[in-house]
Image (cartoon, rainbow, N blue to C red; front, side, top):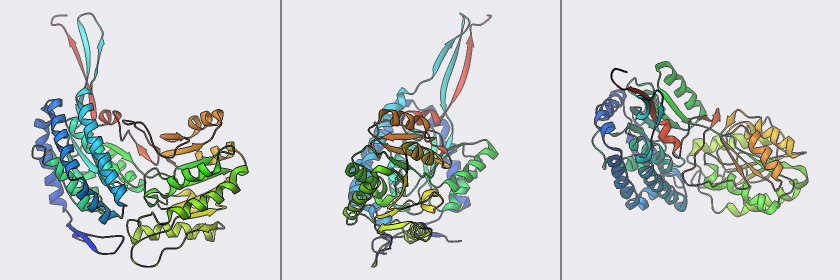
Length: 451
């Protein structure tokens, strides 16, 4: 087994970071330190925990450019995307610093001389396993919410960006008492050790569905809580009545932003037949305009995965309209790719490609688009582009996903949340609802003495 993680720049192949993998002893020790810190941290007033989180947010803000530069080198993000992820993380930390002290329970009146208090309490030690595609923004949500509710943590960043993840967590840890936030580096084996450790009460994981299923099994066996946001196969429906130039712009943004490596990237496109020809022509133009803006895929292994999906589609009868061939030269770049005449059994339609691929399937009606979009084992998100209010209403009610976006592939209110379904996971991963996920409710029935 390897003892180190080696990360190279996906643009140049140059070495970026070499990190030692934590062994079983180190993982157990980290969990032990977090458990030892729990009694004092959980008893710390919520306002004091929030104040520490504000200090941490300020430290991350001060280091934003350095963090973004390291993220850019480890994962291939563009400079703007990398800095945007840090800024989003800072905003999230500050948001939880405000929300934490406001998190409250309820009281129920029973008999006149009695009351039931429903009090939220921290769950204990949380193992936080975060992904590479937006390592700071995602980690800020899980770590910030866990910290402000009184939990202690062991954080394992993705093995594809251990330098970025560790540096971010170190900035948070410096504002906290010892043991409150432990950091371990490693790969899937390390994550499995944490997920199976009897000293861990919650495993919060953002990543692949396969890993999420394994975590769910381990947690179920020992009664721990699994909080999972896993893979998605997000559909985009283009209705017959929309402006096809605008729709193509939305589809390109959803499929190509961050080289398609966003949890809620557009993975499947269903176009109602009357709009299909115009939409495809506009989408090709959009793809060509994105070509010079894309960063690389995270590494060679992932590029092979993306290209295998494209190759499978073409062999199975899809028409390659643009892209579809790895670019020569250094780096793990892949061009924006548009596929037409896709069928429901192709890998690009049944699996999460997670690359800059726009597979298009033409359907005869909006009802057919809705039925095919809903026929999927994932349940993360979906987008519907339509000017028909009835179609929009039927879509958000019928699609079995956690988030339905009408007429915008990205966006959402600050503090918004979502709950994935099916193979995409379980539990709220953002917003005020995440505070509920990371606490458990204790009921105190209080009666007057002698009653």
